[in-house]
Image (cartoon, rainbow, N blue to C red; front, top):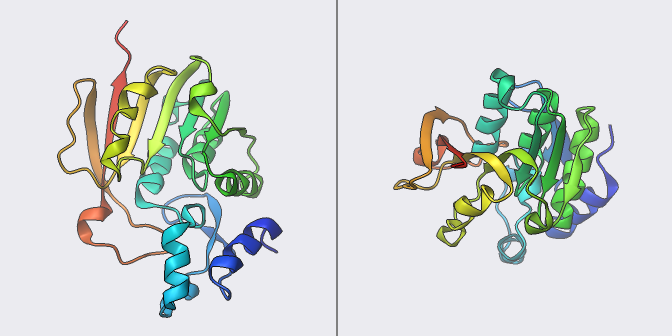
Length: 219
């Protein structure tokens, strides 16, 4: 199976020899177009490192929080079955695809990065599910039953979004492995699970512990 041409071209611009492969995610039935793990075994040149830092290809990894959120929805389809769902900062689309696979009525993959949405389209096709797409969360109407979010709180500047999620959805489900002092009056922790980014980036153990937080709009 050949990788999507536009995504492969974008990855090749960053890392000349890097290849996308269709990989099955551990502990799931989902497949994503991800950077080949073999590409991660070599040292990157200073120029490659600069390019990756300037324009990280988030969409060609399945981050630990996204993997946990996808597993959570697969194991608890009642969270999304028959509901309208928006995946904020969708990246590869893993959580959106999991929601669609679990029977959501509608799933919108929302991301500012056009390449991320291209990855979502390719990955949705790989898993034979239908998604809708959006580049601007704030242009969406308040019509969603659930906003799902993974790996957005790595930047504390994003914390105000926790309130904004409930401006477009009745509930929010947030997966995060970075915030150790998470406190918000509307969000309660549902639990903590272990996962690693795929392909494995050998991240510290603390980033392999993913917490899930849930909030419900008050009215």
